[in-house]
Length: 213
Length: 138
Image (cartoon, rainbow over all chains, first blue to last red; front, side, top):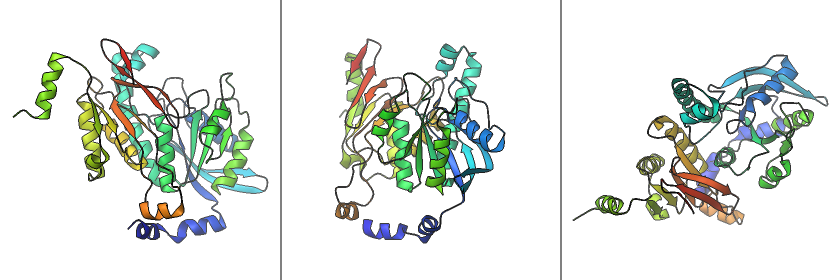
């Protein structure tokens, strides 16, 4: 039965796309809260369209609805790639409104509202996995890479056979360790960047063009 | 005849503590995705920690996260703590053909207000059980 299922799952579409390349792709920016997803989305959008996608904040779950930017054209070494970028809410397995109140000084009602919206954002982010052609998984390389969210997202992408590029973000921080992240996920391309300062961002763009095309 | 839940309640009254259920692969195996998620959420929302001999596939984990988010109540249920090792790697192409989809490895899932991960790498999960009396490291 598994052999039959494997044969059933083989379709010509992905094969042809791999053979001839794909110039217009829908790319989701995923990751846990506060990894720098919106900062990266803003960096890409500003560099190639002159506009930003949304506000970033040190308070977790700032992005609670997915936002998209269509037709972002990235050029690199004579090749180009047109992206629809989806900046998704951070994926988490728990959301406690007390954190917003105690750690960030919000009123209880505001904290509860933010928590409720954040739960809806997580559901929406996972739903978007069905509609993207590839993923930039943003990880904070000052943190332990083996979080459940990272493991679950990567497992999903591998099961769906979606191309993934890991963005090892926050390398401007002294405590960052992109090498740890590369060692943790050797099967995927890992590009260390600082979405905040733009450090090594050109390397990310060239890898995106090669990887998602 | 007392059932398991009655016995558990009796024990909890005598010596309050956290219940850990070790769930075999045979118990979870025949369940559909929906049944697995319902079973896990019911147990966790009742305050129990589950150690699954064979955890969930990545797709099932994503569905569990979605279902958890839909059930979060700011006052009574803040979500789950879940840690798994991912799926078993295939040793060769024949194994892939015979086994089909990659099989998940062990997982631990519990209420986020009771279970907290301390450290995790590719072969070890260290977690704390948070109790009113103190912290137990597992």
